[in-house]
Amino acid sequence: MARTRLYRNGTLALENFPAQDISDYVCEPDCTVWLDLCDPEPADFDLISEEFGLHELAVEDARHDHQRPKLDRYRTHLFMSAYAVHTDPGDGTLYTSEIAVFVTPNALITVRKTGHFDMDRVVSRWDDSPDLAKEGVGYLLHGLLDYLVDGHFNAVQELDERIEALEELLFEDGRDEVQTVQRQSFELRKNLVRLRRVVLPMREVVNTLLRRDLHTVSDAMLPYYHDVYDHVLRATEWTESLRDLVSSVMETNLTVQGNRMNMIMKKVTSWASIIAVPTAVTGFYGQNVPYPGFGTQAGFWASTGVMVALSVALYLGFKKRDWI
View 1 (cartoon, rainbow, N blue to C red):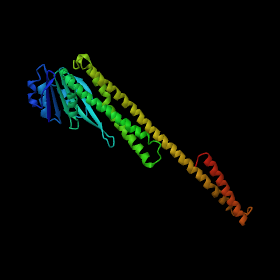
View 2 (cartoon, rainbow, N blue to C red):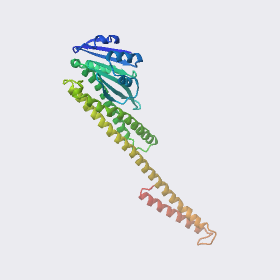
View 3 (cartoon, rainbow, N blue to C red):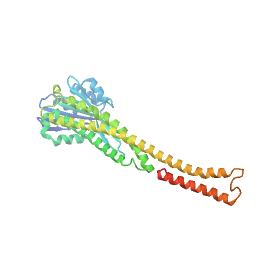
View 4 (cartoon, rainbow, N blue to C red):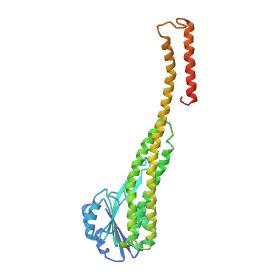
Protein backbone atom coordinates (compact mmCIF):
# COMPACT_ATOMS: atom_id res chain seq x y z
CA MET A 1 0.00 0.00 0.00
CA ALA A 2 1.41 3.39 -1.00
CA ARG A 3 0.72 6.94 0.20
CA THR A 4 1.84 10.01 -1.68
CA ARG A 5 2.00 13.75 -1.21
CA LEU A 6 3.05 16.57 -3.48
CA TYR A 7 4.19 19.95 -2.21
CA ARG A 8 4.48 22.74 -4.77
CA ASN A 9 6.19 25.98 -3.69
CA GLY A 10 5.72 25.04 -0.03
CA THR A 11 2.02 24.24 -0.34
CA LEU A 12 0.35 20.86 -0.24
CA ALA A 13 -0.96 20.46 -3.79
CA LEU A 14 -1.88 16.78 -4.12
CA GLU A 15 -2.32 13.80 -1.86
CA ASN A 16 -2.69 10.06 -2.44
CA PHE A 17 -2.15 10.30 -6.16
CA PRO A 18 -0.95 7.15 -8.02
CA ALA A 19 2.69 6.33 -7.41
CA GLN A 20 3.17 5.90 -11.17
CA ASP A 21 2.58 9.66 -11.60
CA ILE A 22 5.62 10.54 -9.51
CA SER A 23 7.79 10.83 -12.62
CA ASP A 24 5.56 13.71 -13.77
CA TYR A 25 6.52 15.81 -10.74
CA VAL A 26 9.88 14.61 -9.46
CA CYS A 27 11.86 16.57 -12.03
CA GLU A 28 10.13 19.90 -11.34
CA PRO A 29 12.40 22.11 -9.19
CA ASP A 30 9.53 23.68 -7.25
CA CYS A 31 7.99 20.31 -6.27
CA THR A 32 8.68 18.05 -3.30
CA VAL A 33 7.32 14.51 -3.34
CA TRP A 34 6.71 12.11 -0.47
CA LEU A 35 6.14 8.42 -1.15
CA ASP A 36 5.37 5.96 1.63
CA LEU A 37 5.43 2.19 1.13
CA CYS A 38 4.07 -0.16 3.81
CA ASP A 39 5.07 -3.83 3.64
CA PRO A 40 6.25 -3.38 0.04
CA GLU A 41 6.40 -6.05 -2.65
CA PRO A 42 9.40 -6.58 -4.95
CA ALA A 43 7.54 -4.66 -7.66
CA ASP A 44 7.40 -1.62 -5.37
CA PHE A 45 11.17 -1.62 -4.99
CA ASP A 46 11.54 -1.91 -8.74
CA LEU A 47 9.26 1.11 -9.11
CA ILE A 48 11.19 3.39 -6.78
CA SER A 49 14.52 2.24 -8.20
CA GLU A 50 13.35 3.22 -11.68
CA GLU A 51 11.59 6.46 -10.74
CA PHE A 52 14.30 7.84 -8.45
CA GLY A 53 17.48 6.15 -9.70
CA LEU A 54 18.32 4.63 -6.32
CA HIS A 55 21.52 2.71 -5.73
CA GLU A 56 21.12 -1.06 -5.71
CA LEU A 57 22.92 -1.43 -2.38
CA ALA A 58 20.55 1.02 -0.72
CA VAL A 59 17.55 -0.80 -2.17
CA GLU A 60 18.95 -4.11 -0.95
CA ASP A 61 19.28 -2.72 2.58
CA ALA A 62 15.69 -1.52 2.42
CA ARG A 63 14.52 -4.99 1.40
CA HIS A 64 16.10 -6.75 4.38
CA ASP A 65 15.01 -6.45 8.00
CA HIS A 66 17.02 -5.76 11.15
CA GLN A 67 19.37 -3.17 9.69
CA ARG A 68 21.53 -1.15 12.03
CA PRO A 69 20.43 2.51 12.40
CA LYS A 70 22.67 4.36 9.96
CA LEU A 71 22.95 7.02 7.27
CA ASP A 72 24.65 6.03 4.00
CA ARG A 73 25.64 8.56 1.38
CA TYR A 74 25.37 7.81 -2.33
CA ARG A 75 26.00 10.01 -5.33
CA THR A 76 22.38 11.05 -5.93
CA HIS A 77 20.70 10.35 -2.61
CA LEU A 78 20.99 9.38 1.05
CA PHE A 79 19.76 6.20 2.67
CA MET A 80 18.74 6.12 6.33
CA SER A 81 17.71 3.19 8.47
CA ALA A 82 16.03 3.90 11.81
CA TYR A 83 13.59 2.52 14.36
CA ALA A 84 10.49 3.79 16.12
CA VAL A 85 10.02 2.41 19.64
CA HIS A 86 7.18 2.17 22.11
CA THR A 87 6.59 0.35 25.39
CA ASP A 88 3.67 -1.82 26.36
CA PRO A 89 1.62 -0.01 29.04
CA GLY A 90 1.00 -3.29 30.85
CA ASP A 91 4.32 -5.08 31.28
CA GLY A 92 6.68 -2.42 29.90
CA THR A 93 8.00 -4.59 27.06
CA LEU A 94 9.86 -2.56 24.43
CA TYR A 95 8.78 -2.91 20.81
CA THR A 96 10.57 -1.57 17.74
CA SER A 97 9.35 -0.77 14.22
CA GLU A 98 11.91 -0.50 11.46
CA ILE A 99 11.78 2.12 8.72
CA ALA A 100 14.02 2.72 5.71
CA VAL A 101 14.26 6.22 4.22
CA PHE A 102 15.58 7.44 0.87
CA VAL A 103 16.40 11.13 0.67
CA THR A 104 16.80 12.75 -2.76
CA PRO A 105 17.06 16.47 -3.56
CA ASN A 106 13.28 16.79 -4.00
CA ALA A 107 11.76 13.54 -2.73
CA LEU A 108 11.44 11.58 0.50
CA ILE A 109 10.66 7.85 0.23
CA THR A 110 9.77 5.98 3.43
CA VAL A 111 9.62 2.19 3.50
CA ARG A 112 7.89 0.65 6.50
CA LYS A 113 8.48 -3.04 7.07
CA THR A 114 5.18 -3.46 8.97
CA GLY A 115 2.07 -1.44 9.71
CA HIS A 116 3.08 -1.01 13.37
CA PHE A 117 4.91 2.20 12.46
CA ASP A 118 2.30 4.96 12.90
CA MET A 119 2.93 7.21 9.90
CA ASP A 120 -0.21 9.25 10.65
CA ARG A 121 1.60 10.87 13.56
CA VAL A 122 4.42 11.92 11.28
CA VAL A 123 1.94 13.41 8.82
CA SER A 124 0.30 15.29 11.71
CA ARG A 125 3.66 16.86 12.58
CA TRP A 126 4.04 18.02 9.00
CA ASP A 127 0.56 19.51 9.03
CA ASP A 128 1.25 21.28 12.34
CA SER A 129 4.04 23.35 10.76
CA PRO A 130 2.94 24.14 7.19
CA ASP A 131 5.00 27.34 7.14
CA LEU A 132 8.17 25.20 6.94
CA ALA A 133 6.99 23.20 3.94
CA LYS A 134 8.84 25.57 1.62
CA GLU A 135 12.09 24.06 2.94
CA GLY A 136 11.39 20.93 0.90
CA VAL A 137 12.84 17.56 1.78
CA GLY A 138 14.60 18.91 4.86
CA TYR A 139 11.22 19.82 6.30
CA LEU A 140 9.77 16.34 5.68
CA LEU A 141 12.84 14.59 7.05
CA HIS A 142 12.81 16.74 10.17
CA GLY A 143 9.20 15.78 10.95
CA LEU A 144 10.11 12.11 10.65
CA LEU A 145 13.25 12.39 12.78
CA ASP A 146 11.44 14.47 15.39
CA TYR A 147 8.79 11.77 15.74
CA LEU A 148 11.40 8.99 15.99
CA VAL A 149 13.55 10.76 18.58
CA ASP A 150 10.56 11.81 20.67
CA GLY A 151 9.51 8.15 20.73
CA HIS A 152 12.98 7.19 21.96
CA PHE A 153 12.81 9.86 24.64
CA ASN A 154 9.35 8.75 25.81
CA ALA A 155 10.50 5.13 25.99
CA VAL A 156 13.49 6.09 28.14
CA GLN A 157 11.23 8.09 30.44
CA GLU A 158 8.81 5.18 30.77
CA LEU A 159 11.65 2.79 31.65
CA ASP A 160 13.00 5.28 34.18
CA GLU A 161 9.63 5.39 35.94
CA ARG A 162 9.50 1.61 36.06
CA ILE A 163 12.98 1.46 37.59
CA GLU A 164 11.95 3.96 40.27
CA ALA A 165 8.91 1.82 41.10
CA LEU A 166 11.16 -1.23 41.26
CA GLU A 167 13.53 0.47 43.71
CA GLU A 168 10.68 0.84 46.21
CA LEU A 169 10.30 -2.96 46.31
CA LEU A 170 13.98 -3.68 46.99
CA PHE A 171 13.68 -3.83 50.77
CA GLU A 172 10.31 -5.58 50.96
CA ASP A 173 10.40 -9.00 52.67
CA GLY A 174 7.45 -10.60 50.89
CA ARG A 175 8.11 -13.52 48.57
CA ASP A 176 6.08 -11.96 45.75
CA GLU A 177 8.00 -8.69 46.01
CA VAL A 178 11.35 -10.47 45.88
CA GLN A 179 10.32 -12.41 42.76
CA THR A 180 8.97 -9.21 41.16
CA VAL A 181 12.29 -7.40 41.69
CA GLN A 182 14.27 -10.28 40.22
CA ARG A 183 12.03 -10.73 37.19
CA GLN A 184 11.45 -7.05 36.36
CA SER A 185 15.08 -6.03 36.82
CA PHE A 186 16.10 -8.68 34.29
CA GLU A 187 13.38 -7.57 31.84
CA LEU A 188 14.34 -3.91 32.24
CA ARG A 189 17.95 -4.71 31.53
CA LYS A 190 16.98 -6.50 28.31
CA ASN A 191 14.78 -3.59 27.24
CA LEU A 192 17.55 -1.09 27.89
CA VAL A 193 20.04 -3.12 25.88
CA ARG A 194 17.55 -3.22 22.99
CA LEU A 195 16.84 0.50 23.32
CA ARG A 196 20.53 1.36 23.41
CA ARG A 197 21.06 -0.38 20.05
CA VAL A 198 18.39 1.88 18.57
CA VAL A 199 19.18 5.17 20.29
CA LEU A 200 22.97 5.29 20.30
CA PRO A 201 23.54 5.20 16.49
CA MET A 202 21.00 8.01 15.97
CA ARG A 203 23.53 10.44 17.37
CA GLU A 204 25.80 9.83 14.40
CA VAL A 205 22.86 9.86 11.96
CA VAL A 206 21.64 13.32 12.98
CA ASN A 207 25.17 14.65 13.32
CA THR A 208 25.94 13.59 9.75
CA LEU A 209 22.79 15.30 8.44
CA LEU A 210 24.03 18.56 9.93
CA ARG A 211 27.07 18.55 7.66
CA ARG A 212 27.04 21.43 5.21
CA ASP A 213 28.36 19.41 2.28
CA LEU A 214 25.24 17.22 2.19
CA HIS A 215 23.01 20.20 1.30
CA THR A 216 20.06 18.42 2.86
CA VAL A 217 19.36 20.83 5.71
CA SER A 218 18.79 24.46 4.79
CA ASP A 219 19.85 27.33 7.04
CA ALA A 220 16.24 27.85 8.10
CA MET A 221 15.97 24.22 9.24
CA LEU A 222 19.29 24.09 11.11
CA PRO A 223 17.86 25.19 14.49
CA TYR A 224 15.20 22.49 14.26
CA TYR A 225 17.78 19.81 13.50
CA HIS A 226 19.97 21.04 16.35
CA ASP A 227 16.97 20.65 18.64
CA VAL A 228 16.52 17.05 17.44
CA TYR A 229 20.23 16.43 17.98
CA ASP A 230 19.95 17.75 21.54
CA HIS A 231 17.09 15.32 22.22
CA VAL A 232 19.17 12.48 20.76
CA LEU A 233 22.05 13.30 23.11
CA ARG A 234 19.75 13.48 26.12
CA ALA A 235 18.09 10.18 25.24
CA THR A 236 21.51 8.55 24.75
CA GLU A 237 22.90 9.80 28.05
CA TRP A 238 19.70 8.88 29.87
CA THR A 239 19.79 5.37 28.44
CA GLU A 240 23.39 4.89 29.56
CA SER A 241 22.60 6.11 33.08
CA LEU A 242 19.58 3.80 33.31
CA ARG A 243 21.74 0.82 32.35
CA ASP A 244 24.01 1.62 35.28
CA LEU A 245 20.98 2.13 37.52
CA VAL A 246 19.47 -1.25 36.62
CA SER A 247 22.82 -2.91 37.25
CA SER A 248 22.90 -1.19 40.64
CA VAL A 249 19.37 -2.43 41.40
CA MET A 250 20.35 -6.00 40.53
CA GLU A 251 23.50 -5.82 42.64
CA THR A 252 21.60 -4.26 45.55
CA ASN A 253 18.97 -6.97 45.31
CA LEU A 254 21.68 -9.65 45.53
CA THR A 255 23.23 -7.88 48.52
CA VAL A 256 19.87 -7.59 50.28
CA GLN A 257 19.14 -11.27 49.66
CA GLY A 258 22.59 -12.16 51.00
CA ASN A 259 22.00 -10.10 54.13
CA ARG A 260 18.62 -11.75 54.66
CA MET A 261 20.24 -15.17 54.29
CA ASN A 262 22.85 -14.21 56.89
CA MET A 263 20.13 -13.13 59.30
CA ILE A 264 18.31 -16.42 58.80
CA MET A 265 21.51 -18.37 59.34
CA LYS A 266 22.23 -16.44 62.54
CA LYS A 267 18.75 -17.19 63.88
CA VAL A 268 18.91 -20.85 62.94
CA THR A 269 22.37 -21.19 64.52
CA SER A 270 21.22 -19.43 67.69
CA TRP A 271 18.21 -21.69 68.13
CA ALA A 272 20.40 -24.72 67.43
CA SER A 273 22.76 -23.58 70.20
CA ILE A 274 19.87 -23.24 72.64
CA ILE A 275 18.55 -26.69 71.72
CA ALA A 276 22.05 -28.17 72.10
CA VAL A 277 22.13 -27.28 75.82
CA PRO A 278 19.34 -29.68 76.91
CA THR A 279 20.81 -32.31 74.61
CA ALA A 280 24.21 -31.98 76.28
CA VAL A 281 22.81 -32.03 79.81
CA THR A 282 20.50 -35.01 79.28
CA GLY A 283 23.30 -36.81 77.51
CA PHE A 284 25.61 -36.26 80.43
CA TYR A 285 23.03 -37.48 82.95
CA GLY A 286 22.29 -40.44 80.76
CA GLN A 287 25.68 -42.04 81.49
CA ASN A 288 25.56 -45.48 83.13
CA VAL A 289 27.85 -44.38 86.00
CA PRO A 290 26.99 -43.02 89.44
CA TYR A 291 27.00 -39.24 89.88
CA PRO A 292 25.66 -36.79 92.47
CA GLY A 293 21.88 -37.14 92.48
CA PHE A 294 21.93 -40.37 90.47
CA GLY A 295 18.63 -42.25 90.76
CA THR A 296 17.02 -39.53 92.89
CA GLN A 297 14.32 -36.94 92.32
CA ALA A 298 16.72 -34.18 93.36
CA GLY A 299 19.06 -35.08 90.52
CA PHE A 300 16.21 -34.78 88.01
CA TRP A 301 15.28 -31.31 89.23
CA ALA A 302 18.93 -30.25 89.29
CA SER A 303 19.47 -31.27 85.68
CA THR A 304 16.23 -29.60 84.61
CA GLY A 305 17.25 -26.39 86.36
CA VAL A 306 20.63 -26.40 84.64
CA MET A 307 18.99 -26.87 81.22
CA VAL A 308 16.47 -24.06 81.76
CA ALA A 309 19.04 -21.64 83.18
CA LEU A 310 21.56 -22.16 80.41
CA SER A 311 18.86 -21.99 77.68
CA VAL A 312 17.47 -18.72 79.07
CA ALA A 313 20.97 -17.27 79.38
CA LEU A 314 21.74 -18.15 75.76
CA TYR A 315 18.39 -16.78 74.57
CA LEU A 316 18.92 -13.45 76.35
CA GLY A 317 22.48 -13.20 75.04
CA PHE A 318 21.43 -13.89 71.44
CA LYS A 319 18.48 -11.54 71.71
CA LYS A 320 20.72 -8.74 72.94
CA ARG A 321 22.96 -9.21 69.91
CA ASP A 322 19.90 -9.37 67.60
CA TRP A 323 20.71 -12.89 66.54
CA ILE A 324 17.17 -14.03 67.26
